[in-house]
Image 1: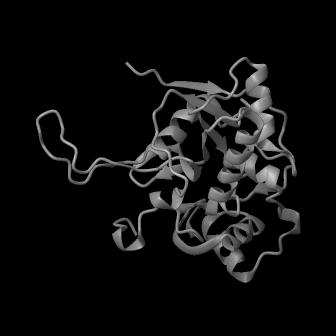
Image 2: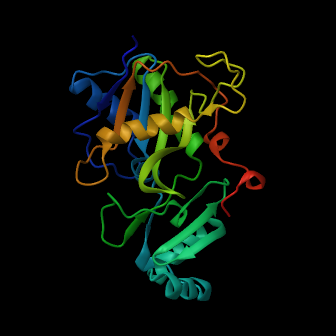
Length: 252
């Protein structure tokens, strides 16, 4: 039976602008005696990637628009934070108490346009999503290859809520080297029934599995290695494959 391991990458320093996050992960993995291997899946939180890329905003430097002030009154959020969210937003999907559900520029729907205060140094600082999460993942994948000679897959993750389920899970917002969807249509189940609609969001499942060791609070672990999962390699993959087209969205 195949065994899949989820390994926390511990003792990473706090990531700052300009850091080589691939090098930090490779060094930490080696120092804890779990060096990167061929076929590993490296899952990294978007906050760590955004810090390295300098995609951090100080809310004291944000001037709220009139629209931001109006939405702030409706939602109970700070106007400067709302303005930061609006700048990353293509369309507002829903507003509610302390909730702004948005469609961002790549079509993904999420809360607050992915603007995140968690695990960001500085009381007034927030992390935006990476400008191009797939490109960020590709860059990290190439750098890991250069440093270790290992071919890996990279997933950049973010925490999302779900329309009809309580609690949040990690999902993939950027991928490199892995097909994010496994198309199982045409396969047969145990009783010979041919699957007609089955497509498994493996990148989301791996991102969520990694969260079991990454954590969201004071653990300080922004990355994990998933070892032993036989994924489908893909050089042209994109996390946008996981985005449900608007015309097929039953929840708006």
